Length: 240
View 1 (cartoon, one colour):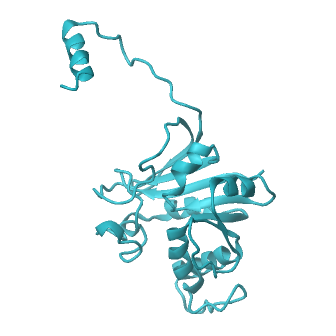
View 2: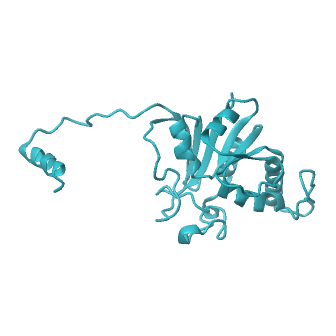
View 3: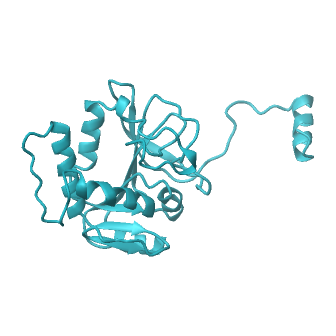
């Protein structure tokens, strides 16, 4: 059985929208597209390389797929298909790395969770209509399924028990608005920390695995004061 591994760039207030560029995803009036580059360093690059270091297929939401399909096949010039070879002569190291990433994404199978009928013309793209379809792919043969971006996938994956590992790269910035990793409808779940790194620009790279449900209890002795009883009564009556 394959694993499903997710990775996301986050602000301190949990926003993951449009880290890569100003025009990446301005939906909802998001005004801070391209917030990541000022914090990008060699440690972040190494973490990304490690995440994509082995054979993988991609699992994406429809909008992230649209962003990827309009960028990665063309990052070194006009792509003509999976066999396209870009000229690397005279290009900067970062641009060569991006070209190689685009070629790897093009070679990989791309599974797109969508209710509609989007253009899936990028090589090796496959539409999935439900979490049951995702489960079927996960239970089949093949490499790990990896998620980059795609905030809409996480609540449903947690609910279905299909997410195996999650790497969060949290950067020292507060954005105030935007799409968040765990939005409305996210189920309550515990996670355990399995790896952690602090980068030289202050990003915290932490990897988690599922750890079951939420246990409820008191952090200290429970109050039995008259004032606490009055507060409880006010809450029950909607006056607090």
